[in-house]
Each structure stands twice: as structure tokens, then as C-alpha cells.
Length: 489
Ligand code: PLP
Image (cartoon, rainbow, N blue to C red):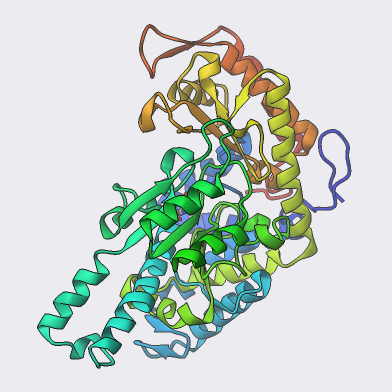
């Protein structure tokens, strides 16, 4: 049984500790082989582990996958082309990829209680793009083909094809605004979704920073979107997906939930009932590498009426599947079905609470005043800083975070006014509530000792001794909660 650095016992074993000797031997052998071909890559790989072990990683979208997940990716499964779907491939000899994809999809269905799972997307952005096309194909293309009396687009006349293309390209999407915490793929211009759809956003209440369901419903009634998107990258609160579904149903929209950030909290049953998106959404997308703690990749869960269209993701939107990554998804999903993962997920949420309380007690201002998921969003204007200055000063002191917009951000999307913190990674290392309170203390120490230079939104000075003091304190926390304990290269 592991203990956090306050000595409190935890029931989650350190990641992969039970097979650390075997994993160490495997990594040593692999790095020796790599070194014999391209030593710089072996060196960078070794150095990355050392750097990750030595830094206070608070980036909300990152985590540490288990050695089992990481090792699964390094195999000859990578060498196989397997465009198509299970049992229906455009290439011969895919029997083992079929097994891999079936096992991964089975774990995903069982873990999330979903009728259908698609494990091919290479990333979260790819998963969202597949989902959008699947919704368009189900809601716009299929009825248009039926109207034209044909079964397949290839049989449409040129004129009907142009009409269909126009319909597909003129649909509406309603998603959370970027400064309220939404994601680029929810219809914003730097992403293809912003060019595919007529987009409108819903924000949060200007006073409380909380999602205003009445305002979402009013926007939906007025805008009548084909797709209502719920989900976020930087909103520090839970969402009531039953209410979002009611709103979608009222206006005839498809509810798509992007749970990329909080999938681990859904998998670990921290979010249940109305807070579990899977039974409420028509289509749920996610990444597999954030709080879910798997390999980098994407995943889609869908209600039966969308399954056929999602299944056409490759080659409709995606290139050939990555069998080695699908295999690693299967391993990570198997891990997430263990009771230890539920303990981990609960600790992620408890730790976020401790971090938020630690900030509030020290006088810092948080967007929405706190958190009830894995994210804490700190408004650094109260320290007289931009997000850019705060991010750089923290990094200088060994604290890795990222700057983020806050609602109605006075400093825009580049410099920003917020710093986003997340607890999934350090919780994997074994950090507990007391450790996160200490993290809050260290962050406040850095920010109170940082000053802007003139009117610059980027330049800053850090008072002498601050970086060394904070690095030394962080090193103690990190040493008490080692990353991959027992893993030696
Ligand atoms: N959706 C959300 C809500 C995200 O936060 C992210 C990434 O940060 C993505 C999608 C995109 O994921 P990926 O980087 O794997 O494409």
C-alpha cells in the first residue's frame, strides 16, 4: 500500500510498481537497441524521463501512462495497415488487428456503459471530426439521399450532389465559448470545425463564472443548431448532461459531448447520474491520454443510430488505424476497469479541491471561486500579471503549467489572464491533499514575487532566491512521490 508524503495511507499502488523490475529490463534493452541506431534519440528519451521525474507537472491535459501502456506501443503491430472496420478491412491479413480493435472497443463499451465504441481516432481532434461527419451523415446526408430516392452518394445526379454539398456545408453548431473554457474543435476559426459550421457560442454567467443553462437554452431556441456541443478544456466545474440533453431535444439538436478532459472521472465513477455524459449524449468523444491515463489517442462512444456512420470514420476522415496504439488503449481501458482506478479518479477530484482551497485561503482569485472536477483556473490579474508572465515565472521555478484565457479576458487569447492547473498527473505520482496545499503555497510564493517589466505583457522579474527556494521545496515533494518507482534505466 502506498502512502502520500504526509504519511496518509492510500489504496492506489504506485503506477506499475508491481512489475517495475521487468519493465526496467525491457526499457534498458529497448534503449540499448535504439542507441545502436540513433544515439540522440536514446539520449532524448532518457532525458525526458529525468525531466518528467524532476518537474511539478500541473498541466491539466497531461498524465503519466503506465509502463504496461507505454510498452504496448512499441511493437510490430505498428507495421500493419488495417483501413476499414473490424472484420471488414481494405487490406488482407488483419486478423490480429481485428482482435486488438475488438478488445479495445469491448473494454470501452463495458467501462463507459456505451452501446457502441470506436477506438480508431488518432487524437481528440480526429475523434471530434469523425463525430461531426457521422452526425452530418446521419442527420443530413442520409435523409437527403432518401429524399432523392437513392441509397448512395455515388448514384446522385450532379445537381442533387451540389444540393447535398450545400446542405452539408451550411449546418449550425452551438458550443461553449473559448474564453469560458470550450475547445477549438467546438466550432472555432483556427480549427476546421469553425469553417465547416455556422457556429455560435454559449458562455458562462458573468457574475459567478458558472454555466447558465437558461442562457444555453435561450441560445439554442434562437439559433436552432443541428449539433449542441458540451464539454470543455478549461471549465473547472461539472456539467449536468441531462439538462443539456433536454435542451438539445427541445430544439431537435444532436447532443455531442467532448469529455476529453474528464473521461477519467467518468471512468472512475466520480461523475455519475446526470454528470455522466454517456447515457445522455447521442455521441460522446474523448481523448485517451488525459485523465483517462492511456496512450495518446481518441475514442468515440455512440448511441446505435449514429454507430454506422461513426464506423466509417476511416477512411472518411481518418488515415489507417494505428494498431499498436489501439492495443495500448485496450491495456489502459483494462486498467481503468480496476477498482484502483476509481480510487485514483476520486483522489484527482479531492486533490483539485485541496489545491483550490489552498489558493483561496492564500487570497488568490479563482474562476468560479473553486472547482469540482480536476481543473483549477487561477485569475493572475490579482497578482498584477498576465498569464504569459505567470506561466514563465512558474516554469522558471520548476512548476509546469499553462496560461489560459478567463471569461471576458482583458489580455486576449495569446497573453491571457489565467493559469490552468490540473491534478491528474501529480495524483498518479501519489500526491495527496496536503501535497497539493503545499503546491498552492509554492505557486503563490512565485506569483507574489513576480513583477511585470514596464508595460510589457511578457517580460517579468522574479525576486532573487525565489526560484531556488521553490525548486528545493518542489524537489522534496517529488522525491516523496516518485514517478515510476522502481523503474531504472
Ligand atoms: N477536446 C478537448 C476538450 C481537448 O481539451 C483537447 C485537447 O486538449 C482535444 C479535444 C484535442 O485532443 P488532441 O490533442 O488529442 O487532438
